Length: 94
Image (tube, rainbow, N blue to C red; front, side):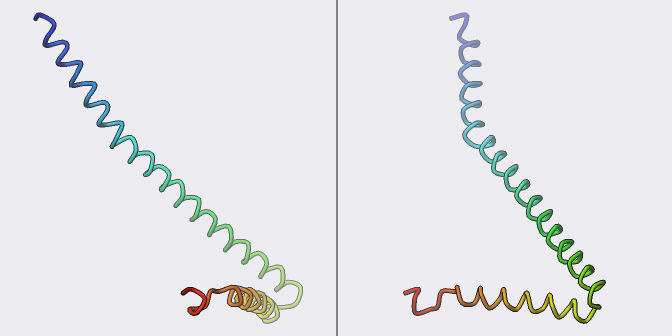
């Protein structure tokens, strides 16, 4: 009977540890992954913007500013047309 308080304390600690591992630890992993994903997305978007700024600057040096904007607009237009061809129409969804 003397070790009843020790056994009770150990039991409560083990229950608390299991509950924490089932809830808080899982949520912490999800939050870490979400934060890493947001940081990667932001860095990727910044890299893409800087890439297009560099391409526009290089084209502007070669053919002038208006031609550089025209070339980039044509590239984006072609990309949009290709994406438009790949879309799923409402009739095909059903």
